[in-house]
Image (tube, rainbow, N blue to C red; front, side, top):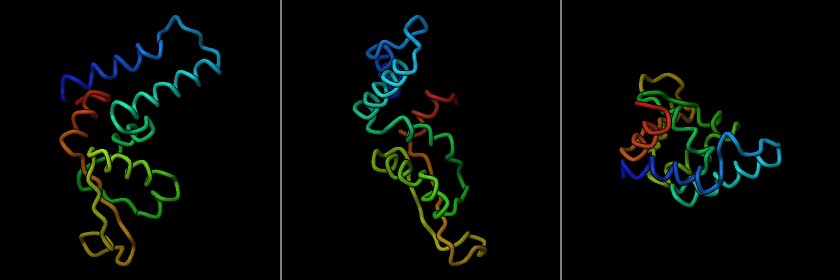
Length: 123
């Protein structure tokens, strides 16, 4: 899997014709971004928007669930979880007992999620 991820990403860009010399009109960029997003969904099982959420995963960090739902991040994290890239643990408050009664969420990377994040964003 580790070697296939860079090849998949290279394929995604090559298959959609994204390079510096290609047209940069707004319509062209939008079409290319849509094509890359489609390829990401097909090859990796998640959208580009979901992949971008991998940068937000920090071990031991908690998020208020309602905040994630309000800004649309919850759906993206659930998409990553369904694909096996993250684990999600919900709790009623923080481990130290504060924020009791408030739905909190801790998100962790799986081995697959860690590999993808390393390829996309560096170790």
